[in-house]
Every structure is written in C-alpha cells, then in structure tokens.
Amino acid sequence: MPILPQNLTVTLVLYKTSQSFSPFYKALIKIMPPPYSSHHPPSAADDDGDAIVALHSDILQTHILTRLDGAALISAASASSRFRRLSSEDQLWRRVCSTSWPSTTHPRVQQAIYAFPSEHRSFFSDVFPVLDCRSLRCDLNRSSSSSTSELISAVDIHYKDKLLFSKVHSIETKTNWFLGSPFRVDLIDPKDSIPSPIRRTEKYEDWLGHLEENLTVSWIVIDPIKNRAANISSRQAVKARWQWLSGDIEVEYTTVMGGDGSIGSAEEMVECAVVVSCGEKEEEEGMEMSVREVSMRMLDMEGKHLKGKESMEILGEAMERGKRIRGEKWEGKLRFREYEERRRLRKARKERTENALDMLCIFTGIAILFSFCSFFLFLFLST
Image (cartoon, rainbow, N blue to C red; front, side, top):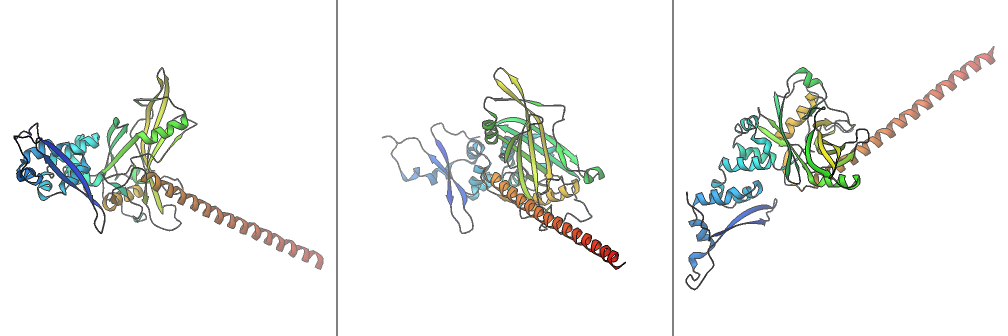
C-alpha cells in the first residue's frame, strides 16, 4: 500500500455554495508540496489539480478519508465522481457509525444495518440528520397494526463528549399486551443505577443549565423489517428539572411528531420523550451523580401515554416518511417551546369551553327550578 510522504501536507477544505433550492457543502482537497527552495523552483506541474490526480487512491482512502467524520465524508463525496467512488466504501461508514454511536457495534444492530440498501451509509443517512415529523399525519384508528414485529433501540449518552452509557434493547411489538398497554421503554431496572464520573459542585439552578448543555443523548430506533431507522432524541436537552419528591434531576430530550392531525384532538400532535434521571450521593469531591432512569415514552397533548399500537404507527411513519434536515442543536428546544405554547393555548381553549358549558348547565338548572316553582305556585294559588 502506498505510504503518504511525511513532507506532503494534505488539507481538506469545506466550502459552501448557494443553489436556488438550498445551500450545500462540497469538499476540496488541497495537496501542498514541500516548501519551495532554490533547488526546487515552483512550476506549473506543482498546482493542486495535478497533485490530486497523481495521488494514489489508497493514500486518499487510508490517510485522508479515514480521518473525516460523517458530515465531512458526505461533503467529500460530493466533490467529484472519484471521491464519490472512494467514499462509498462501507468500512469508512462503519467506522463513522461506531465512532458516533458506540451502541451500533452490537451484533443485533450490525445484523440489521447490513440489511439496509447501502448498509452503513444508508443507516447514517437515516440517523445523522435531525428528524422533523411535525407535518406527518397518521391514521391511529385503523384496525390493522404496524407490520413491524420488532423495534430495536440503540442508545448512547455522552457527557462532555465522553461516553457515559450505551445499551441496545429490543422489544416485540406484535403481542396483545404490548399493543394495548401504555408505550414505554425502560433501559435500567428501577433497583439499579449506573455510576458516572459526574460531580456536582454548583447550585441546582446553575447545574440544571450545565446538564442541558453538556449531557447529550442519542436514541436510535430501528425497524429490521422495513430497513429504516431514525434518531428520535432531540440530541440536546429541551428542559431539565429537579424532582422534589425523589430528589432526582430529570433531563428531557423531546421530539415533536404529528399525530392524527384532527384539529382539537388530544392526539393532533404527540411528543416522543426521552428522559434521563440522575440521582446524587454526597462524596468528598462533591455530589456524585448516577444514572437511575433512561426511558422513552409517547405522550399526547394532554400528557396521557399513548398505547403501543398508536405509538408504533407514529414511529413507523417517522422512520419511513419523516424529513431529515440539517439543524442546529438549539432548534429542538425551540420546537419544543412552540409545542408547549400550543398545548397551553389548547388547554386554555378547553377550559373556556368547559366553563361556558358549566355556566350553561347552571343557568339551565336555575331556569328549570324557576319553572317548577312557578308551576307549583300557580297550582297553589288556583286552589
């Protein structure tokens, strides 16, 4: 295999170009020869174009493309047909997936990924972008259930880019118990807890903001039947709060999804909530944090749990038809705040309707009572 010369510098430059539809990124590889000297004057043969053409493909694959993350690898693949061909090697994408999501190295997940059309590259294109499912509409009242018989969850929790927790969990989705019960996936037994190197040295108010910024969660759901996957976590926390009853800190990662689409319905929109709860124990260096709960549930606009059947319909639509967009880490919190405002307005509208009905019932009762009293008074006076 060709060896990259030590005196040859390789630089990957990403540049942005604007098109009429949307901006996209391309990659430019610059090959810089050794510094010029009196014995090596510059010539036309030393330009970047000739250097990149002359560079062996094994050098590009082994010494350059293997150093890129997924986003940069996609950009490099769009630079030219040669880079597109070199970037299609599955081993490159397997390395990217295992680096980004360590849980994907699990044998069950690997078995599912190899059934995808382009294996790890297809899996990455499903999972890496931000999932936007707010415009989806699902028929939650149809009698037939989803064709998916198994739902695989691959979960990774990082604190300041260091892996804190990683687990793969699989559930059967065809049993009557699952379809009729409230949908909830728990990864940690209630009696257990996962120790962590996190130490709280700040006040609660400051610490909640610290966890929102530094504790990130990836929850990938995989449909091994339809060969689709999606990351249903908001990646960055949408809110963190202290539970006064248990004393735990609860951090939530929520993705808002479309429900049945019926205006005014409690399932018009739903939230897929990933919750991480951390407990504390006093140590010499501060309060030691441990992970006590990692769960995922589906809630309607009234905060009620959706059943397994409805949840699988929505998750199936999200994996298959959900938009994959390039989003910033703060956009998940913004979408959740919009959803919270929508819930608040719906609750206020419902309360006004209920108050109006209550007043109508009161006035109707008073009118009926007055009519009865008038009737009996009339009978009494007529006798």
